[in-house]
Image 1 (tube, rainbow, N blue to C red):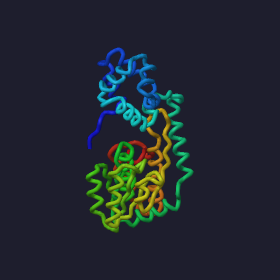
Image 2 (image 1 turned 90 degrees about the vertical axis):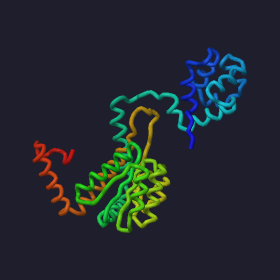
Image 3 (image 1 turned 180 degrees about the vertical axis):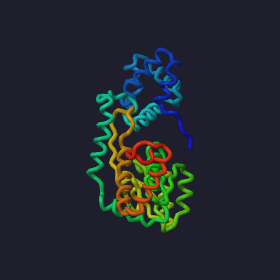
Image 4 (image 1 turned 135 degrees about the vertical axis):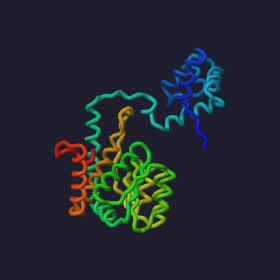
Length: 287
């Protein structure tokens, strides 16, 4: 598969090399990509105050075959959304980060499916092993987080964030295993395909993802997360906190279902850590 630099990046890159007339065209395009994608060559020329020949030269200068190709690529660039092209103001500052996290958690708290949580806990309790797959910035960390939550409770668990390894471990499962697939969007092909393979070989597949997504359709059980992105693209997504909270819910319910085993396991961990690092008895366990 061949990937090309998107047209907005290409225009920005080529801008210093353009003639003065072509720079006027470039600025016109960058100021309103949607309008430029719809406009005729005559309209573009009139708005930029240049000849139609200049519009044609500009198209070729930014590596397009002709003006039609330029307009097609401009239209394609809009598919990512205007928020990645035109900068939205930061209206909330630092407090907005905390508010975004709080709102995301509250929104997801309202849609927690307690029956699905109970089912997931039952499967995890009986599993020979739990295999967790998550890829990308947020889901990779959350896959590791689920591993860290479950191993300290005494369960056999491992996490993977490589596409090829995900397929390999999915191929190694049995009907006694649980395969947990994490993806906020539910569209990551490597995660969806790994879940399909694990299901084919008999493992119970739990997805922590958006309901109705391709991953959710593959899974035997979905623990749904709701995502809601803002126009301010520079702030990290708060959606990963929804996934983390759901992992904490599952881990807590699993611990409560196995109190005797878990209490002894956690006590041993606490003794080992305190002997190593010292400090008070109220420090976070393992952090």
